[in-house]
Image (cartoon, rainbow over all chains, first blue to last red; front, side, top):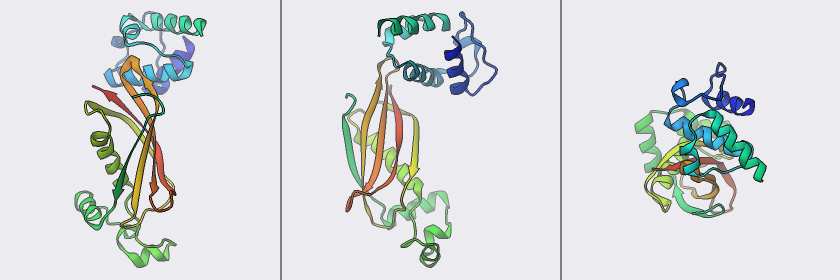
Length: 76
Length: 130
């Protein structure tokens, strides 16, 4: 979660971001549709993983996305 | 499209192109307009505006790629060498990464002089398929 938090701070240029498991786009004003793309690309680059569009759509919050990252890395 | 696929197109900064750029954006810095000034500063002649290459890049992305339903997410350009009037440039772009999750494609690109392949500008851009 801390590494993902750093990515959010960097991409959204907001040092005050403190993600929790249940954080969603509605909690972070800068998390709009274009920044969503930038966030996903930055996360995929950082962890050298690739999500499918379906996987991204099914994540309900940041925590589930982090779980998805861990799952991808465990299979690598 | 897949990583490694490449695309290219030729461009020339003609006097008409430069005049159009100046007419629109009013950048009349002597480096771009005054041959004597430019030579005194060590250049071969007046240096073409770097952002004209940005315009060429826009045309390339919008008109030369095999997909038309696209939007530019980001672009970075680094100017390496000066470009002079009427030089023929070759823009080459190669797909670096595809992000299927968000329908995004990242390219590396370079403008090079056609006559000797010297790179005058390079960078990267990311587009989204809409």
